[in-house]
Length: 552
Image (tube, rainbow, N blue to C red; front, side):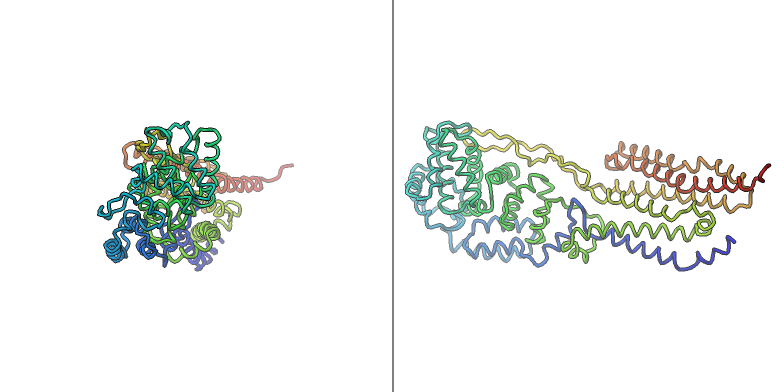
C-alpha cells in the first residue's frame, strides 16, 4: 500500500510548487524595499528625469546668482555630473562678463553703502561677506543705512549692539568688539532684505528682545557665532540663499557646525539644502549619519534632485547593495512603499513554504500519508515563518542598530574673540551594512541545519518502512536520539568556528553571526523532536498497546 502512493509523488505538483516557490523567493530577494534603509535602486528611480546639480547651477546662473551656482558646480564636479563641462563653460563666460558681481555672488542694489572704499580693480573672485565689514567705514555706512529702517525687528537686532554682558564675544561697544558689531549689522541687513524666513525671524526677535531687556546676550550669542562662521566662508548671495531655507536658529547652528568639521562636504550639503529648500532636513541627516551620510548624499546628488529629496525625506541610510537589483520594481516601491514591504516578506514566506512542501511531496509523501500526525502540513508553515523572520532580521542591516554618535555630532566649541576653530573629530562610530562574509557564514549555518533536519526525517522514514515489530521500531527510535540531537552539536560547532574565524580576522567581528548557529540548532532540534519524533513515538506506543490482547 505504501508503494501505491509513489505515482502521486511523481506527479508534476511538487515541481510546480518548487518553481513557484523559487520565483517568489527571487521576487522577495530582488524587490528593493527595506524598513530602515534605502536601496540604491530607489535613489536611481527617484532621480530619473529630475535635474542634476549642473542643471540646477545653470538655472541659478540664469537668475544672476553666480555665487550659489559656483558652489553647486563644485558639487556637480564631485559627483561627475555629465552636464558639468557644458555648464562650467557658460559659468566662466558669465564670470568674464560680470566681474563686478562675482565677489558678492550676485547683486543687490542696497549693497552700494558697503562698497564705499572698495578698490574697483580688486580681483573678481568670491569674497566672504564679513570681509567687507572689516573696516570701520563700511560698518558705519551700513549702520546709517539700517538706522532709518521702519522694521521693528531690524531695530531690535541693532539694539543688541548695546548689550554688555557676553561670553563668547567682546561686547560690540567696547574695544575689540568689531567681530560682534559686524555680525549684528549683517544679521540686521539680512532681515532688512527679507532673506530670513518668518519662523527664523520670530526666533531671532524673541532672543534679541530678551537680550536687550536683560543686558545679557544669552542664547542670541550662539546664533551670532553661527552667522560669524558662515559669513567667514560664504559670500553675500550664498549666505542669503542658504538662510532662506533655514527655519530656526538650530538649523543655522547645525550648518555652521558642519562647515567647521566637514568643510570638504560644503558644496554637497549646500547644494542639497538649496535643491530641497530644506536646510533643516539636510543638516539633520548629516548630523545623524556622519561621513556615511555625506557619501549617501553624494550618491543621491549623482542621481538627480528627486533622489536627494527622497533621501532627506526618508532620513534613512543607503544599503550597500551587493547583488543584482530589481530595477523594474523600484517605481512600484516608490509609489507603494508600505504595500511593497508587506509583499516582499509575504513572497518570501510563501516561497519558503512552497519549497518545503515540494520537498515533503517529493521525499515524504508516502510516510506523511501513513503516519498522519508525524508529518503535519503545519510543520512547513512553522519552519517557513521562522526562516522568514530570520531573513527579515538579516536583510535589514540597520533594524536593530541604535543611533550612534557620529563625527558630526554638535559639541561645545568655545572660540576666543570670535575665532571659530574646529575641534578634532573622533573616529566614526556609524556602522555600515552587514559584512558580506558575515551574511555568508549565517547562510552556511542555516544550510547545515536544513541538511540535519532532512537527514532526521529520512531516518524516521527509514525506520517506518522496515518490516519490524512495533517495539523494535521504538527501540530503534530511542537509539537514534543522538542523531535527533545533532542539530545542537552542529550549532555549537558552528558558534565555536565563527568565534575562531572572528578572532583570526577572517570574518567581521559580529556575535550575531556566531550565535546564529546555536539559534538554528535549537530551532532544528525543536522541530524534529516536537513536530516529528514525538508524534511518531506516540503512534507506535498506541499501536503497541492496541496489539496487546485484553486480559480478563
